[in-house]
Image (cartoon, rainbow, N blue to C red):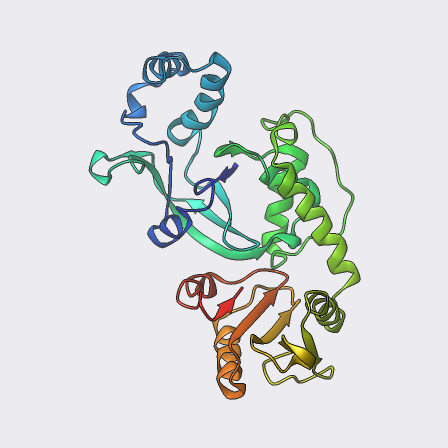
Length: 304
């Protein structure tokens, strides 16, 4: 069994389509050829030279390494990892279908594999840093093998997506040995800082941190006592002594799982009760897809 990294567009613009339709698409615009007609890598490379005349040879080789696998290297039973660009979570599924080419779907959806998404909204913080480095590759499609990733991710699946304690073995004979050099440095830095912060600030301490950030922005802040908070942790308001406009309800979550839809609804209810203008829902481990789907509807009232 192999594990493949797949991206749903540079900004995650195809993520909802991938998840709702149970597929991963090779989203190369206007790439209108059936890959089954190019079983040899060399013949597919020659075709790429014709389609993308003028591109550098190194660029075409890079694209070839991403295009070829969806038809000839991915197998039924392999796992696909889809890092979310909308929330700080990761989705994992199993390849269920053969490579399919369907022109009727239109660009850029000609090429796809059917996927059963068996684990959605896994917090990024659950994964070890070296695994996150691999998941930060700039490539749209690549196989993840470095540092015994397949075995370790399987063990996480058995352990409710938590990392089991143990010694890390380093393997260099991997398909993705150059991934770190091609990784998204910004994402890697974000993950490292995130892991450090959550070690220092969790639960009530995170609420205190958010309180100080809001105060630094000029808000007057009320912080509820530790324990039951009735659906809101902080009240923030602008103006002199906080008697001005821009009244905000803030709910802070540092639980080990993504926030679900009822938490969002509860914040909305508190906002109505206290006549707040806006709501801020903060979740250190991201949001379930059911919450992310509400983001557009709540855009003018609540920020995630």
